[in-house]
Image: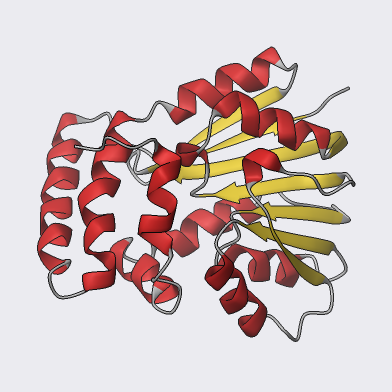
Length: 227
């Protein structure tokens, strides 16, 4: 059972996993991570500046740059070795820069047309993250949050639970990921991030949109700053 706060899990999950992250996230989601990120990209159109929070190794960051080649992009992550991996992978993209900061203490001194965050919401305090995002968001801009969710359908829940039992066994063969496969399903089951962020966004006057993905395995919430 998880005793730490969700944010305390971040160093346990990510300090020694940057080299294998891209392969593991693709493998463990059966390639759905790519589909989910495509759905995030569908929310982008003519933005000129994008802030990618919890950019990790730069998977989404690169996809944003490919869709919007003239956009200025800043990737932010709290884990230094993930940022180093992102810089290494995306060193040819002149419009991308990276900053080592905590999303809950964000202080970049500028505003953006869009702020994206994939797999970040469950680790953060909703009010703190949304408030920091709003301070960095232009009027008319969007906050796009994406993360895992626990399915509501009981049959799908049984499939989900069985799959994570298999991942638990797989963890014995992938030591760096063993703790992730133990604690992540507990975190996903116990978090109410979708409801919390949707409520907070509405409280701050954002126009919200929610999209459940892949039988409820993950969800996207979009909040638009209308004034």
